[in-house]
Image (tube, rainbow, N blue to C red; front, side):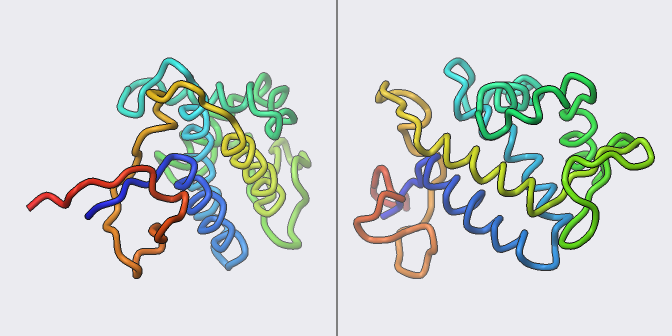
Length: 181
């Protein structure tokens, strides 16, 4: 038997729980990279017209998340001055660094959204709190259409007790089907 993880369960397991552990560890840089991808993912979740597989819409999905999730409201004006998609998301995902307009910090380093030497600083733990709140917003949303991408299987996972995404009777699984041989 295989089980399919729902998009909401994926958000909870990966973007909240696993990423939270990464933020708390000594790997804030990796956490920033995951959050950069996660913002785009959240935008795709709430977009009614874009499927999971549609390509060439990353910038649009990133913008949808920033403009429509209340937890990201403080980034709307910043995004008008600095393209966070280009400076933050594309920089981290394509070259593993932000552009010259953004700096990154963690723990007791520079605070969040402070400008220093012409660079706006993002503080990992503070940014994660906003990102986590945005994730929780998406999880709390009702997607009424049973055919909506948020109501169908997202990620197939093997069904056994050793798999952290699978729990008997949990909301993690939204459908079960026989294992292919």
